[in-house]
Length: 400
Image (cartoon, rainbow, N blue to C red; front, side, top):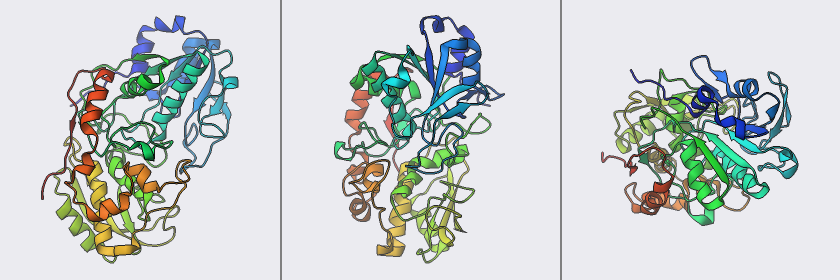
């Protein structure tokens, strides 16, 4: 049985020598910032250790407890009940800590789990905190955490600069293969803040799966199964195909009322996506909120039956959309802006990472070089950011 890696926060708490030079601190965290088999909260542990030197908590999208469901639903400031520390929301009128919130603070501490996918706001909250640290002369310390979808493979095109947004600020592939601390080092090469990373121990670079501990990072990623599928099914956020929001299985379902047959849809998907790791079966479902609320959607359910086998999740998302276009034609439409505070470009472009993504999906085969665009440059650039020696490589869809 695999053992869980030792998190950066656990390494820090076991040694505790470094914190004496950090001065007064603010902590970026949420309810998923936990460690150990008892799921102890980082905020509580650091308050006990630092005492009055921990002054403020910052929270990302969805709020501390993840109560806000969707993008561009801002969360309020508040008070953390256990520690009685004030909470400053970084998904409100600002996404970067302002000068007034950092007055009297010497060091920003960061302990947020993320999901190993370019399209996830928490890593850009980290980037914005690095920018604030650079601007206002603060230190930023990242307690490193593993990438839950693995640290050996990359997948999907690297984001083109014309489609940068709040969920895409660097030219990363969809699956970037980095730990949280490695991502910080990668983007800080451009930002230049004072950065420290408290490293992981015993990370084997494989995807996380049960019985390894998992605390849902945001309300629609409740399980490791949904996390494994997310780098592909997140593409559906840019189209009028439901990704299962509003059901008990977000990012484990795909469908829409306009798909004529769940059976035919699932059968075609299996031909496109032959994988021993994922079982695809027909499924009808009825969302209670979000896209197609109150309407029965016809589509498929995805079961990750071999979580130890790495599968090309981004390619699965491409297949889901491409098959929908085949069976439903022009009924499949891209969503209109805005998406994560970008008001001009199609959301599907921002997520896929390319210009005119819908046309590319409809016309280009899944083995076209556009879907691996930028990999060579990325692998060269990212090498200096790696904390744990390994060779990243592309993960490609096997031929049917």
